[in-house]
Length: 273
Image 1 (cartoon, rainbow, N blue to C red):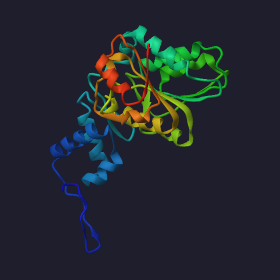
Image 2: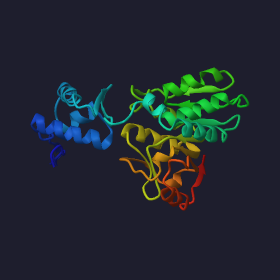
Image 3: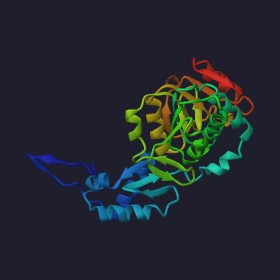
Image 4: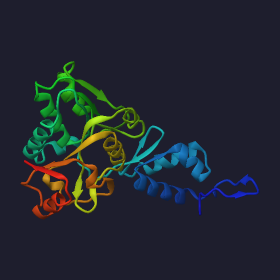
């Protein structure tokens, strides 16, 4: 296999050197499959210098679906709408979902708040609840942090850090997940682009998907907040099975009734607005 390290009589052979066009095609496939690749990993895999790999990534980033980030490159879906574009889509349904999700938060809770326009509605609803005190909110969204800023010092808002995704104003890997290894949250409220009875909770953007999985693992309860257009849909990044979630909050206006019934039949609590 190309790129494999062969060991003979205690000697480690260098990876086979492949032509630049072949190497770049394979790197492109890795970015698409994994969501993020590191320069340091690729140099060992392909047996070339970091300068060569950086040049490869710069060339690949002429493709709109791949972006350069510190230390590597990441995948982004070219068709993914911006945060601002998403805000005006099904805005009333998202507002109601946000209110329902915020109603499940109690004073003293530690809350993980994911990125996205529906989660932006959750942030707005949390900010409007003057009764909430001593809530610690961890988010990887710069937009949500600004929405919640007026609640400080009544509540505490912590931003994860990480690599910026400009269209979503979100922070992803590398460096976004480290905070969660030291946190046990009462609830994580996550967004997604697909909820399906068989496949589970999915997302179109792979780097964000990876971080959502970490959020789910760090919380005692998980609430999925998704408008009805996401119901019955399956996207490439698998966040986890429905059994990982405590509840799904969605709207009945745009959700496919059969798909929603199938999800409810799995045993997850389904709340419709």
